[in-house]
Image (cartoon, rainbow, N blue to C red; front, side, top):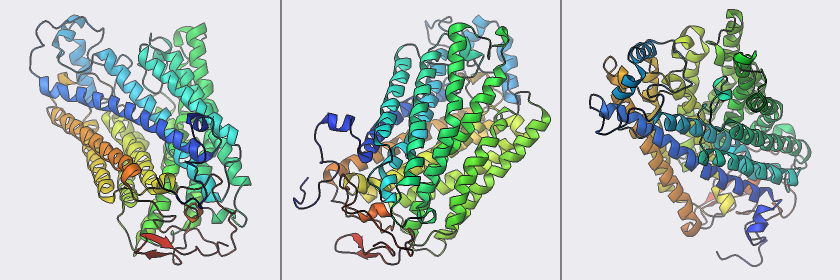
Length: 610
């Protein structure tokens, strides 16, 4: 790539050699390395997802057919349900329990079609590793560690984060934690589900301790990132940038960092207790040793429900940036959106019990947790209505990042509204542990966090790489992912509401009474492959831009936040001179920026930037 010799050297060319990346203290390079690692983990987790969906389409194809000739009936010890699956409070699961309990174990195995992609043990390990990889290696670190690391100091007008060495250590810990999960993958797998529920996790012969140590190390990586972001926001804002002159993405990262620092230690301690019980026979969670398995659920969800907001809050911050920029309009209700991020972070610590409505907790506790669960939806709704108000009468430009923002609004809206059924005691008892829960979770985590991650990636891609991507390919990828996602998970709402239990290896015994399960699972599998095609298009679009994309201007989208006031890609020190802001600075005042048709960029200086 040709560069003007008089221009400052950008961060990509400031140093050469692989070691200049591995041991860099530059937040931008660390963010790029996080991005590469997260994309690799996303690919691995996605392959597990496709394997699971292919497997679950096969009962529909093989129902009524005899087992393949020569198939062994004794290959696996369990063929109908996952080993850790428990009794379900829905009719279809009860039917399956009755029908699968009547024959002997051998006859049940013989009745199970043998032409499936995965054996029962492989199926358990596939959905466990899919969940663990996607949660711990992709969705939790995705936006904060990759995009946040890159743009947070730039948005604040700082040269770097507060603790560059701690930042590098957090990335190295992420890599070490990822290696532990790779060791699990190649040395026997993990079959507990990503939640590590006891007492099964304390008795199974799979690699629970190795996976728990990997998650423990990843927790430290998350804590280090949170500490760094909190210190950076407090200490390194540009001169003149008060709290209410910060971009909303920074507010979301700050609220996320608070959750990371306060909640993640609980998960780490809990996983260490599981490892200690397995290694030393301590009676903490195993009832045979005097322990309480429900105690594990309290510990786990005290972290893991706030972790939902670790995942979704940064996504909401990204969407705030995208909607204002591509609506060419000042964000509506800035302070309401900012304070709602803090409210979500605080209320998120009070609602973990709604995961345990069927665990035997008292009716009073369940009623309190149900009420609190409904209350946490209020600040989320505040954000959504403010985003809609921002778009109202705006000059909306349907460029690729905005396509992802609109997809987020639709998908997150469905995810949030279906969550109301799981927060209500009367309906959760029936929907618990069905495919309704899987669909809801993916509409929030994939349809919310991962879609926003893709939107933010396309938005800041020109700043990160100095190259513009092909808009047609970008929109096509967004459309394929949107359609494929809905085709995958919307049918699962129907499956769950009709009683299909999750985590079951084989549902063929249900098809005589519920023939619709076959078609809905095939439809869901087709959607999964369409989603995979969408990700391939996205990869082609972005990788192609690295070689064939036109050079990116400093401000291709016309945003007023500080990261767009430096070159693309930025110099190593971020800015040639530190930004100074006056009282009139507003990160969402866009009227002073004008589009230049000749350069394909926006020109002008944002109001209040000295």
